[in-house]
Amino acid sequence: GVSAPYSGAVDGNIVVAGGCNFPTVPAAMGGEKKFYDTIYALNPSTDTQWRAIGNMTHASAYGVGLSVGDGMVLIGGTDGRQSLANAVALTIDKTGKAKQTPLPPLPLGLDNMAGAYGGGYIYVAGGQNNGTATNKAFRLKYPGGNKWESLPDFPGNTRLQPVATVQSGAVGPIFYLIGGYNQTATNNDGVAFDPLSSTWKTIAPITDGNKPVALVGATCVNSGASYIVCLGGTDKEIF
Picture (tube, rainbow, N blue to C red):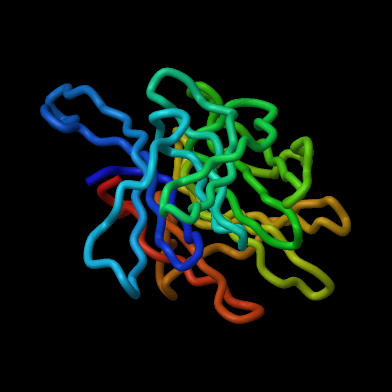
C-alpha cells in the first residue's frame, strides 16, 4: 500500500501512480520513507487484478492527479528531496502501456496542494514549495495551453492537503479550494475563485451540524450542477 499517489481515470481504467510508504521500519520508529514510480491500471469491467503499465518520470508522491477527458494529468509532488514542478499528460496506448506527454511545468515546485479540471482549465492551489506553505494558485488552459497563468493569491490561511473541484456557479464555473491545514490549525472553511472577476471569496464553514469538520488528505467529487461531495481524510482529533 502507498500514501498520496496520483490517481485518475483513463479510457475506462482506474489509474494509480507513484506514492510512498515506510516499507521496513515504521515512521514512528524513525524509518525512511520510500517513493515509487510504478503506474498501475484496472478496468473494473474486465480485469480481475491490477496491471503495471509503466513508470512515471519521477518516483514521487503528494502531487495532483486529475482526469481530463482524454486521459489524466500528473502534476508536481515531491521525491522526498524537493518539490517538483513537472507536469505530464498520461494516456494508455493500444498495447495497454502508459504514454506520457510533457506539459508546461509549474512556475515553482509544489507538493501537498490540490487541483481540479473544469471550464477548459486545470487549476492547482495551496500546498508548499520545499517546505514553505504558500497561498499560490495557478491555472493552465487545457488542452493547448503553453504556460501556467498565475492567479491572485487566495486569502486567509495557507492550505496543505486541501480538496478542490470546479463546480457550476450562477453564470459560469467556479474553482473551489476547501479545507486543508497549516502549521497552526486546520481550516474548516474554503475559498472560491471566480474566473470572470478574477477574485476570491471565502465560503461558509464546514460542519456536521454541531462541530467543525476538517478536510485534510481527503477528496471530493461533484454531484449534479450544485453539490460537492467530500470523502475521507484524516481524523482531526488524532491528526
